[in-house]
Length: 253
Length: 210
Image (cartoon, rainbow over all chains, first blue to last red; front, side, top):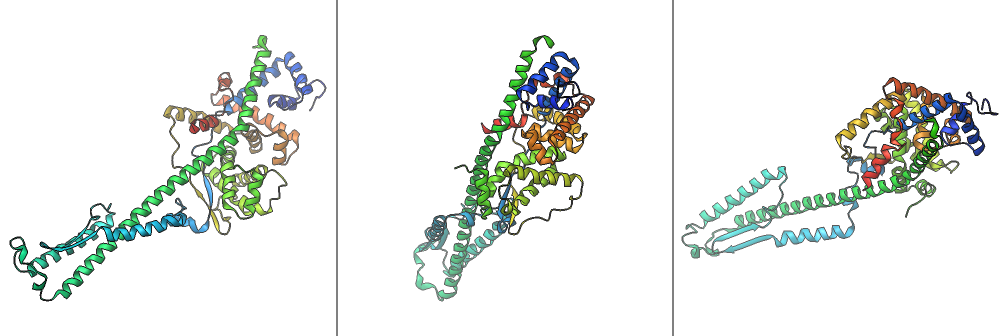
């Protein structure tokens, strides 16, 4: 306060206090009395108010950062800090295990009938093949085809002509054949388990990502609401005061 | 259940990461905005914002409520801004506390606004940013704390560690200088006030909520 007695042109402290609405009634009256008689200071006040208005247009770049503190173990996954098996509830893991076993039993169909031995998996085409699986699938199917060809030739007569002639007793040595079938069945089970696990992991991951996103959005909005309250009060005060100031000085504009 | 900052601080001090994360959610935008407006560079502002929370997390046990949590956080951030601008700390950060780290969950792109909106605002924002960059840091900091964080003269004086009268001087000189810089960049004051002082950031946040 360089000139506290009359709030003269040199009293920039008073000008700033008035500009930011941070002065008592006495100072306010003093400032207004001075502005009423001093065009220079009035212009300056108006100019600085204009600068403040311009500043309102300065927004920080989006998106704002959204940091979260996580235990260091999870950080290896960087942008996906929560892995499905860490966050999945126990019941879902148990359900998954049951599902796995059920799938490997229910969807594996083995028939030994009039048209020979059939090993079929319901899931083989439903599986959403990862690229790595394709070669694997091809090899497995080739094995199956080879087995079928072997069986047909081993049973001698063309199966299509005389299916009834094929009997279990006509096979001389079933052991190597059974081993091969066993191997194929195991192979099939392994593939199914992997498919199910993969799909389950995928599902859980999607659910978890969505959950985190929802949670984050909610938290963010709550945070913004809280942060806004104060800012809005300040803004409203500014607007109100500007209006009051403009309304109070009709002849000076 | 919404906890106060103080309650969250107490829980964080007992090692509850989630409580600290709630503080982060609450304060990361203001801290980022503060750092951006003081430093003027987006990348540095992100670094400072992250570093601010890492430091806060590290020393939260030592924070005994001698000040408001937000003031404490602002002080950390402002000190970092000062260091960053002196370029003493442009080297990689080495203050990640034992056993934790921060991950950035921010979406890679800004949510959809109309392009004209965005370009127009960026152009104006850019000019204001240039004008602000042209004034001394302490004046700029005072203006940022006053204009965008609604602080009182006294709060700014406490944060800047200077007398209240100095804060007013900084504000006056800063705004006066800014006025010249804006006029020099073709932003005339005649068209200056129609925005009514509304913060476009706040508006945008409003929009995102609906």
